[in-house]
Length: 87
Image 1 (spheres, rainbow, N blue to C red):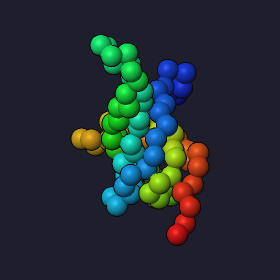
Image 2 (image 1 turned 180 degrees about the vertical axis):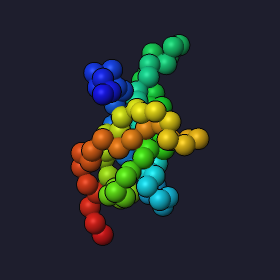
Image 3 (image 1 turned 90 degrees about the vertical axis):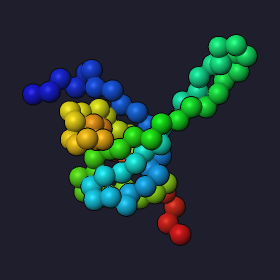
Image 4 (image 1 turned 90 degrees about the horizontal axis):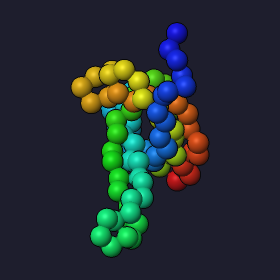
């Protein structure tokens, strides 16, 4: 059994779901600038494993860290917080 208490989780927006069972998630955070003391947005794109291909672009999701699945994927989809509006 894997101990779940030390697993990192992040919340982000799905940017791309064009790959098979893979989503690209944009995670934003606010960091204080060291000199100007102003908060600046920083972002990273993370590849995550989506087993059922259930995410669409614009969804707000939570992802959790796991063992490496491929070269670029070491995160897995934990759940969908908010679905994107269908057009």
